Image (cartoon, rainbow, N blue to C red; front, side, top):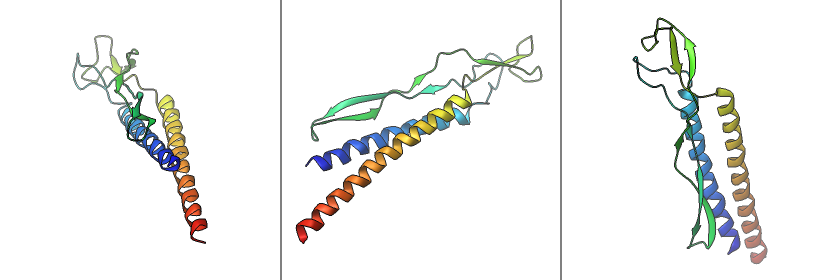
Length: 136
């Protein structure tokens, strides 16, 4: 039945967006964590990717969280001569995480999650109403 297929596809979207939110939360948690010692790299931002594949059991395209990639953007620098990882000029490399970008990505992931959840809720209501009509 197509209604059950739509629930399964939306559920795959829920799982994917949930994984995306976990990656974004990790980025936000490490946004200000510098390296512990000289010569070490700070946290590098992670970028979640998605991949779609054919679910043969459903006969439908579903989405999954793909490989989580590392952002190759340059690190930020911060003047902190007392930090153990500071170079000769007193600069410390900081993570390449922009909290504003991560917050907006999190909001987008939340809205996508809510849209999939609303689709499941609406589909369940339609199934229930169909059952109620058939019982009457």
